[in-house]
Length: 387
Length: 134
Picture 1 (cartoon, rainbow over the protein chains, first blue to last red):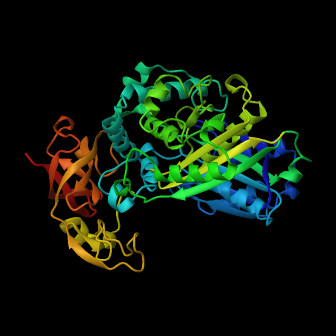
Picture 2 (cartoon, rainbow over the protein chains, first blue to last red):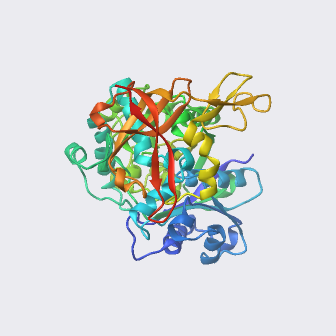
Picture 3 (cartoon, helix red, strand yellow):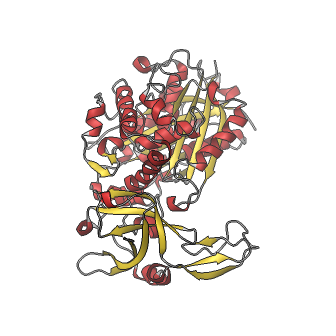
């Protein structure tokens, strides 16, 4: 196994990009990453692309080849990776393994989703495919409803409040307003969240991540080669993935994601680190309750104390452990296949000291946590400043 | 998915109409829906059909205001995870009640209902929902 480094990163502006299609946003992110890495197309020998629902959302499958084509990179090996909302994180792991194994020497990993070309109802149907179609969606479940089940149990078992959940959205909008690539550039208050329309009680519109168009890309190389390309390589020191039963109702507990706990344990063991060593972390906040559960499951806070910690500001930019400096899925937007790669891009910027207004001081080690569906896939990566 | 294939609905009739799942005779774990491999015993498992009583209690719930395509006429509805008295949990609607009538732990009993229609000329799907036990 070879050490692997990130030598270039880039992302498209996340948002409702009505004037750009799937191909345009992917190429935008890809060009930025390649420029950042200062590499030529001929040097790339492999590509992985995370996208969840291109078939349902834009009627396009075979996107591995499509992107190789429109990036002008044929005939490289180009593979689409799908793991619902964790498609990006899992694609990144495929790229990591391709370099670590020695089979590839320079790999681009992208993630993308074009979501605003169809109606909101069609987006909900497409995203529903991340759950159990025959036993959850068929019965009238939606993703907000599944996370509402978790929220209700978390409130029941630990006394978590709707205001504590709202504080997650407020913090993530604050960070997003300091990220030029984020979908939302405005700050909100607890009242904004509490007064917003209920989607699936207790979750309101402002507890939910939005529908977003966006793409992100990174360039990976063996660490020893990376130093010839960049003065600021980012070393990948852990890559872990776990699965769980697909239907939420079949889980032993609704107040934790077992896949997160298992992947985190593996990742910390690989990196020989503990949660205390992490300086900045991007977690999968598809709903506010998901961030509260994630910061507990990753070991930053005790089970049941995530809501309180969030309300007390412990996860803010200047807090104990800054969470979702990009604005997270809530503030930065959630183009599902792109999210896992965007998390890597944000951590790379933080470790390189390029996060401007949202920079975490002296960030040396960062973590990403990407979840598929209601928790049936989890991909976790730990990155270290390699300079 | 706006509509469901007719053969799929037909294959699911025993489970959706009669709450028939299965149980592993080796590790005594009950499953719903049916599994073809016991996740505990894998190939050592011995699975046999089991009909559930339909009695259970609410494990978690939500009032769903924004509903999927095909459920517009039901909106808003209480959707819940029900823990059957034999162990397995299922996702289903709770009928004839408001959000305030339901609590975690409320006792429920299975009822047979229309689940959804696939458009004006499509299939009408039936299956289980639950009612509160007064």
